[in-house]
Image 1: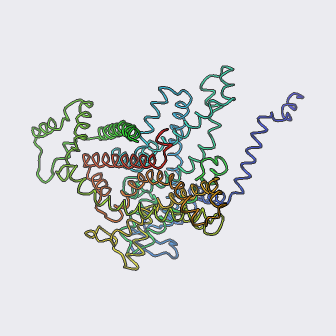
Image 2: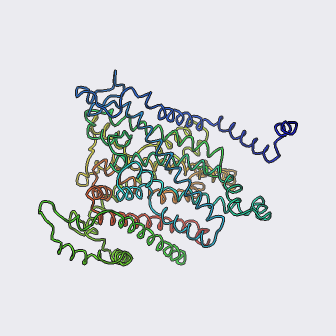
Length: 299
Length: 311
């Protein structure tokens, strides 16, 4: 019992104390950063809307409400108007938030997983592995990623799962290059050399020592990459290559509204504004995180 | 300088080879028989003997690696195959649409560079004032704007509501038709250029030689435009090159929004018509354009900054 109490009240080791202090300092700086706060607030709002979409949407997103209600201008009971088949724009936008955020999260998970793994391996082992990974990333990055995604979607066909796949495949090289660069500079530092000296296996050195030290730049890139993924999904859906109707995606809602611009301005204005605000929020958050976590990347 | 040019040219070759390999692999996994795409449903049944002949003629009966070598050899000679839908060589379709895309991309880049650099300089010179904040807010908004939404909003305001500008097509070269597409396409790049210019100017302004220039009693205008700007523009040149890739992708969407008859529109149309030789050809050509622009930017970079040349 006495031993248990001793364990509980035992003071943190110096390294842990430093880490806790650093985290607290970062949180304090983040909370004082106006753009990070504004961006974070927008992002949290979008997440809440996406999670509670079933409860917040006043109408069903797929069902039209009588022909009389088609192209209903904004006003009660359709506060952002209706589309050409009488579906409530607000309800479809609320459900569209779920699609956009899901795409952003899944694509970033794929991209960060592949990019970080290959970046760690290439940077740590160097030589032929590094040459191979670097050559592949150079080829991938020598081509605009959205254009690449358009071609991949043209080949594998439009669906939300293919959007995850296409965007994940084309966005990992940027993460890989960043992590590789970080590892190259970290692996000559004393704490990594010490891990080598005590015979730590490569996997342990990479996961316990190198990866946590790359976390800052990875978080920044993931946040900005999420904005890029949401924008890319909207672009693909706008072109008809992404999420397919009747699933409410902001991009496909815009494409649909294009044919009714002279009669129903609300069909293009509101879904586009939702994309813009979400991307702006993530960019603000990403910029703020970069200032706090990795000022070297500041533009 | 010649050694630097040769070194850079040599590095482009494996990149283009890699891109050609990726495109070939992607096109190879497309389900279905490409020859079946040639069947005209209005003309009834398809002759299997003719199909076999076409397969042999196009090398589709050979192993994949031989098909790739054939594709690569043809591409090097400028033969990108024939369109399944329009029955004409892909190279001539690309040549037909290229001037429209080049016109749009050059206009967008000019607008983005002039406005972006001006905004960046203003923000740096008036650091921590309302002008700095306003410039950077506009730049951030530009970076966050979806190209297609901006295009539709400009169409709505200037075309549908005010009726002052045309919103569709190229109008036979009438410059008024270029305004909205170029503004739309350039907007995203403007924000990036403004942010990079501001950052580069702030870096340069803090250097000792600028302090020396100021202490000599030179006017602010002379210090900024004659001493600081030249060095600050080096990273801007790079970012302009890098952004060309984004501009090419943006052109695909902008051309779709404004029915602009360029390569991007051709690409999207071909995707929906399942005209894979055209998709493959346009993508390969755009990759070549992107690599060429990056090469030119690298050469300019090496020209204006000797440290790069001898690195």
